Length: 209
Image 1: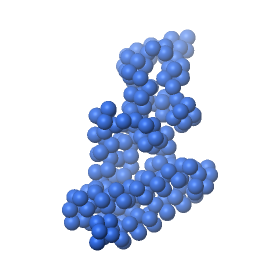
Image 2: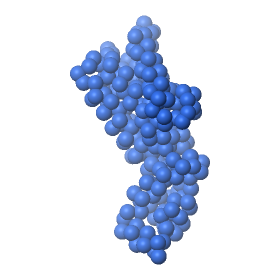
Image 3: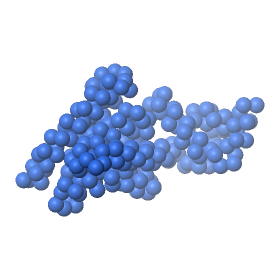
């Protein structure tokens, strides 16, 4: 009865969203390599063929998860920047770096899918477009500190490099375990903000100054 009930529920167009939700849950439990469409189908009580009405393969479902991740990362960066208004642009950049690391810690399945699933974003136009938009809040602040779009992009790349490296180290246990412990996250965030301030202080060197 339970399986038939689930099939009835998802017959009317909910299955696509339910598959994305279930993929996130499975990745949280088992990691990217432990996720399969077959297991997602079993969790939802539908046939193993049912997901293929919405996704041509596993990668396409992962691309949908990554698209959700990019949307939420963009929202997290925007919220981090807005929380510091009307602080100077340097402090808003630092707040963006902190938000990036917190997102990695708090939304690990989404973060790992976005950056570690091995997806070719060029194959998925929606994912590519939303991924590019996710960084727009930070690039806008970087422009306030730079003399040109090229300099702003160079500065943003340096800050994101520092933030992403910190996030990767956090998820690998470098700052302590469990990686979702508030104290461990706070240590990683403090590191990201310190490195971002150092990048900002020496930003002239990024452009050969």
